Image (cartoon, rainbow, N blue to C red; front, side, top):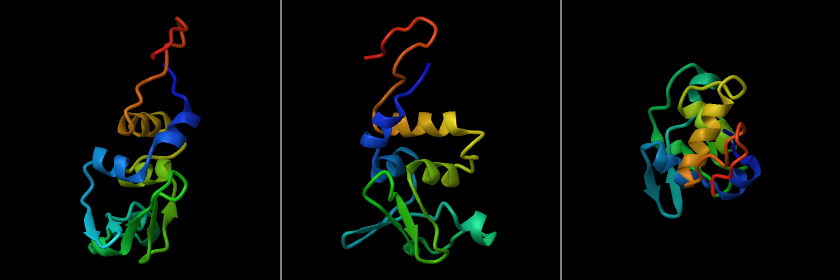
Length: 116
């Protein structure tokens, strides 16, 4: 099975991924705050203050943390939140991103059938 990465990058949105992963969210005005996906990697400890990492609105700008300076795209957000390695676990990250925006697998590499 395979995924259309470009289509996932176009269709996946940070709020959809956060809801799919059942992230704790806090709304404040126009901002939505989430637990920082980078805190453990950058600072060696979890972020106890949910109000310092804001959820972005595009694939490339999925989150930004005012506490540790962490920022990244949706794939990096998934990797950090789920404690996955972006290189070794990329297929699992891609699966989560695809499922969060309602995109199943595109087709079967062995039979060449289209999943749509």
